[in-house]
Image (cartoon, rainbow, N blue to C red):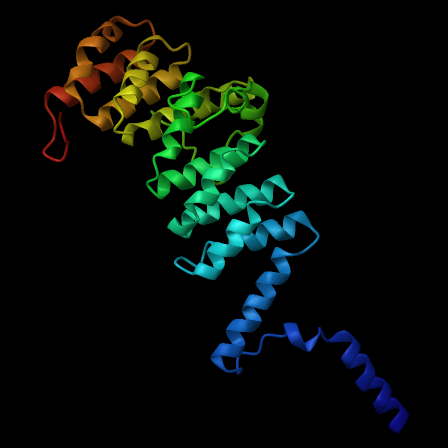
Length: 278
């Protein structure tokens, strides 16, 4: 009988996980928090990329926590691309302004998805470095000295952009009611959906160079999706001076562009009280 009891006790010890990762609801608060950090740290250092990514994504719940921000910033150097993407996104969601320099360094990442994720978080943190990336995506050129030409080539690579597609966390939302068209263009390995996203994000860039780029793409871009997104961005900017250059769109062969321009002109000539005009 004693031998049986001893064997049962041994089996229980083998089945139970190590005591250092057990989380007890009755533990003192400090101990419970440290146990929770131990669990998270285990995920962040796991050999499996998918698990590391899940742990990094979980950090986004800890808004304002400096420890979480440091872990996310460290994950920007992870060997796994998807982990680095998750880290860049998490830093934006954590409102980690102290980690802006790390996000700017991530703009030099060799993977386009990481660059776009970092730009999106910089935009959330109201850092103007994001606008240089979106201008490069939209126009295929540098707005300033912030990006190297090799990076711009990657941002305009149709295969890379199509692979990103509706990538989680990059902030892409189909604009102008053209969701189906966006999907069709992604299927064609077209960069248009992400260029349209870039155009919408440039709406908040105060630089006149970006406004000029939006007017150009609203008029002559080959993609109706990009043109509609540019018109929407101009509407948000609220500058009546752009109307004179956009009048030609009222006779455009593309109905979506034609209708959207007509609405833009009416919006800017009769702005609502909430609309800021220049």
